[in-house]
Amino acid sequence: PQIVISVYGPDFFGNDVVRGYGAVHIPFTPGRHTKTIAMFVPESTSRLQKFTSWFTGRRPEFTDPKVVAQGEGREVTRVRSQGFVTISFNVV
Image (cartoon, rainbow, N blue to C red; front, side):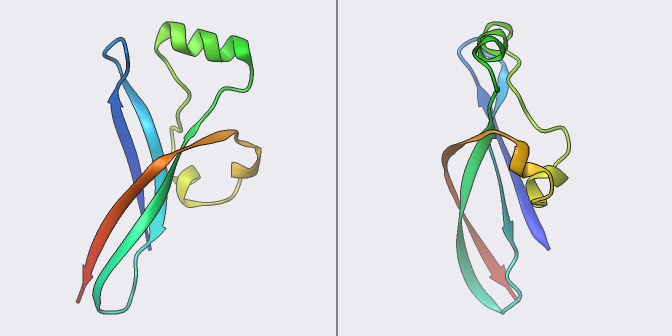
C-alpha cells in the first residue's frame, strides 16, 4: 500500500494551484517510522504553454492520482522538484 500526497496552495492571483505531488510506501513493521517524501510538480513543455498557464492561472496538474503512485507513463512527463514533506507512521 502507498500514500499519495497532493499539496495545494494559493498562487499570486489567489487561485489554488498544485504545489507538489509525492508518494511513499506504508511500512509493514510495527513501530514508529518517519519517511521523507520528495515532492514534484508537472511542468509545461514549451514557453508558450508556460506563459499561457501563468497568464490564465491554470497550471498543469494530474487528474488521476494513480499517475503519481505508479511509475507507468511518468517517463514521458516533464516534472520539476518542489521540496520535501516529512510524514510519521505509528504502525501497530
